[in-house]
Image (cartoon, rainbow, N blue to C red):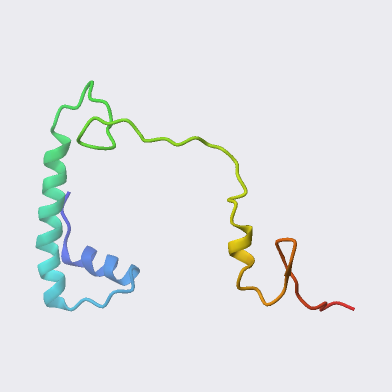
Length: 95
């Protein structure tokens, strides 16, 4: 697959990017080089290769999924102008 100047201009217009004629010509060559590299990658035989999330074999670090209240109620309401029993006290706004 190759990209021409009209395609570059069309994609730039869809992306709302202003591209001059000189930039479009330069980008055409760059995009064709990128697409050529991707075509080379398609030639690699990957039969039997498992997908990886990292280049190094590792196990995911896990923590215990325990539910807590955080034990921070006092710290949270410390700066409140008025608080009672770990709740923020605010004036009544609905009659």
